[in-house]
Image 1 (cartoon, one colour):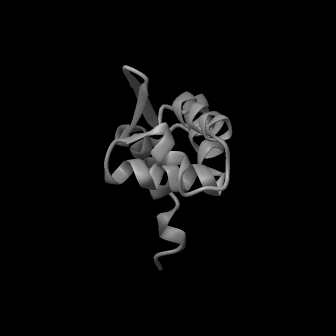
Image 2 (cartoon, rainbow, N blue to C red):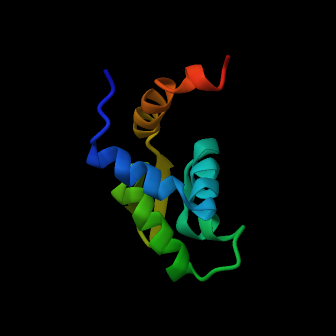
Image 3 (tube, rainbow, N blue to C red):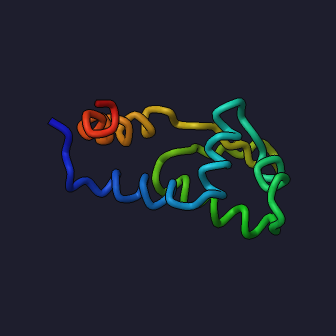
Length: 96
């Protein structure tokens, strides 16, 4: 059974509630990206992009590693599976 009161799920759905962060998840699903690469498609500063990335990191949706001066982000797909498992319980309502 899927747990409904899970702080991880709260953080995941909070992070994914924002369209910018959903697009960032989509970007890193294709390949690892630097913070600059993640900010490039948006009309925002690197500082603003970094705030979005921190929300994604807090939700454990992405991991950031530092290589010299570059911060490289990659997707943590296992965390997305938690959200998917929760949603699958309700799939019966839209797939009739």
